[in-house]
Length: 184
Image (tube, rainbow, N blue to C red; front, top):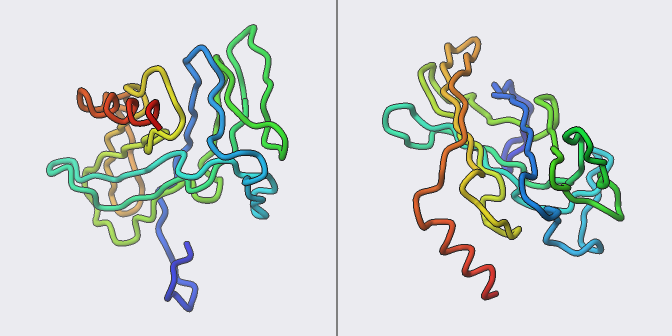
């Protein structure tokens, strides 16, 4: 993990996890940026069409204070897999990206930036919170299913994850941002 001011390579501890996002809506989930603004990512060998697709927060299980964070800073959208009877239409190319209704975009745990740096986090109980479309930049009919939380027990050697579930935004929070999107 590169940070400004770090001049030597040091050992880091990374909490790696997969992310699978499904378009449960009725229309395509499309990038906000126009095609000519997409950026080539040499490490991934494809164009990234979005910024801040997901935020990753590690919260203390008792206080709910954030102890570490990560994010999918740039992202390509593609139909990695789809429900039975739904055809894949989008891929990570320079011409067409998106997520079709009934399709999933999957990022495996070994993908660059699919982690939270927990080097300075002591062993204990935590909550992993993953938020998709955190800035509400892509219009959706329902933002209430964009957050997943999992209970995490970190021993200092391994992580045990359980009780993963979709959680709702506080009532009204996403509705306010939705009106701003429509007015903009």
